[in-house]
Image (cartoon, rainbow, N blue to C red):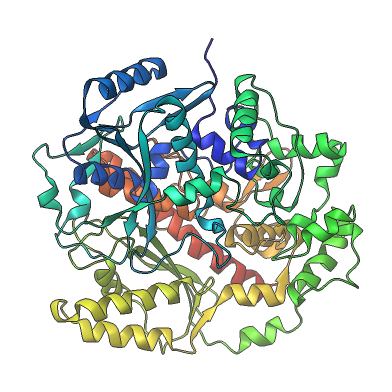
Amino acid sequence: MVRNYLTKSLFIKALECPTKMYYASNKEYIDKTELSEFYSALQDGGFQVEELARLYHPGGIKLNSFDKTKAVTETKQLLNQNNSLILYEPSIVVGQCYARIDILIKNNSNLELIEVKAKSIDSTNYSFTTNKNYIKAEWKKYLYDVAFQTYLMQQMFPEYDINPYLMLVDKSKTVTVHGLNQLIKIDKVKNVLRDSELTKDDLGQEILVKIPVKKYIEAIWNGIDQDPVKVSITEQKSFKQRIEEFSEYIYKNKKYPPTISEKCKTCEFRINASDFIKGKKNGFIECWKEALGWDDDAFQRPHIFDIWNFRQTQTLMEKGLFFIDDIKINGLKLNEIQIIQIKSTQNNFNLKEFLSKDLKHILSSYKFPFYFIDFETARFALPFNAGLHPYELIVFQFSIHKINEDGSIEHYAEWIDRNTNEFPNFEFVRQLMQHLTINEGTIFQYTNYEKNCLKQILQQLLQVQENEKNSLELMDWIIGFINSENLVDLCEIVKKNYYHPLQRGSFSIKDVIYAVVNVSTYLQNKYSELYYGTNFPQGIKWIEEENTSKIKNPYKLLPPLDIDLTEIKEGGAAMIAYGKLHFCDLSLMERQTLLAGLLRYCELDTLAMTMIMEYWLNPE
């Protein structure tokens, strides 16, 4: 029988909500944010940060055993046999609790416990606490993680003086060597690859900072890290009591009694019906059934959690109001978008949409052709070039769709970075300049994300302009682009002029296009035929003819990839795919498969924007 342990990751889950421990440790529950440790590390370059930390602490012994008992035995033996040593990933077990430490340094009776995180910090200006000396919310999970490990270390090795540290990415530093991000890679079985002769001296200026956190850990242990007025019933228990209680639930594989609150809104175990997987369980539904005695029908009603940007959720819940059709608009502080949404949803029996009478006039003020742009981006801890900071914005791809005045549409242009050795942003701008003239037509972005990306590239150019060819031309073009009246935010138009209950309070392009395709006869007729885009040579179809016509969310139609990353249908997966291109040892076919998936996804984003506009221009 496999023994269940309270690990540091489950402990952090329990701090958010103790019931999550059960769902997280039982794989039959769907976790909508679930990424393997490999993909999580790949998304931001976390595995590179861990390896960099080891290179900054050379000469250590890496403990590779996945057998917890064996790993703990090895850790004890090495500590007992040596007065001075460095261990990578030593393991400790106390009762039903287990932790693997990133780096442990022994000097006689002193132990340095170092937790390495890919989170960034400005070492010249930071604070872990508020003005009242309570730990800031953004740092809570990191410091509690270290507190958990340090607590177990003290229980297991009481004879040592233990000093805990957080080792973080220092965004105030710049890289002083070129190609740092290519020095550390990963293979197909997730082993870190680097030149065996690579040393600390090869890495240039250190970009990680080691911060002592003992005083914060002691505050957590003593229960003075949080405002006592704001703590939950569980948080009123001592640190030791919580560890003992949580570990007992984990050991027995028993669910902690659920408590519902507004925090449930962002629970990773709250799964939409469209994302449900056969044979899996929905933790959110189980919690609410147990807490409120709801039946299955209750979960078909529009929930107050679905109200866009709503800040009065807890107040309504305390009054026993959980559904949009139960609330009254009078007496609530609501903005125009929320009022539109609530009224539209309360008429849900007709699936009515709100389509502003002003929309036609608004659209007539824009000149053709209409261009629709989408960028894909990433941020990695280890920069491409010397002179750049950790987590500099990388813009690696664009797609452009176009609607001509005669109503015809085309996938007008696209570009993707295929060079893993160079910083792509400036070539990105050169390519974009070839296809967009700011004074011709109207350019639509979805939110101001694309505009903000170009602002950041402008700042990057200012830092390196003397060494970058045509830098003045690039900067002039960006300034003209971001300041042009012809650059329009399509999402803002949607928020003020369109809503359908199928959006469920979301203005994500994926949810808006799903609603639009479901109500637009024009789109249904047009896209009942196969769509052959630049990156869809086999075509994709929105309307499936089975026994009855069924309209799918276009993003569900993206074909699977034949490698570990099953599909690219949102920005996080696109960043991971781009990370794989840079940091993984891939075959040519695997690289081509990933590139094809990225191109399909980005093309679909601009096509979705185009389809929304097509519906508005042809509101049948």
